[in-house]
Length: 110
Image 1: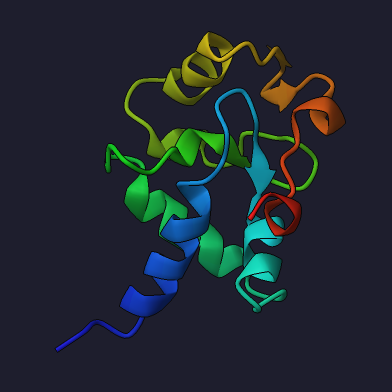
Image 2 (image 1 turned 90 degrees about the vertical axis):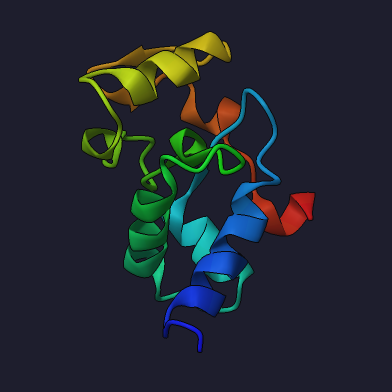
């Protein structure tokens, strides 16, 4: 028996796995890509559940303004920021600098 959100979460994870190194995308962009444009919050729930799954780069999913709104779901106080910085992304006050430069549009990349 499958859980109600299992298929949804797997669709979200399939997109998230494709986010290139050094790039980020948004919850809303993933929702739009899987055909559920009004489900950004549900994408957030899926990503919150994935932050410890090694094959899901949950740190690369941020809000539509480039803010690290999901950072409190990662171990430690700055792990999400540290992971992004290790990929060459510069942040200030929990926000990605040059967000447009680092943004990956799932619909274009898949």
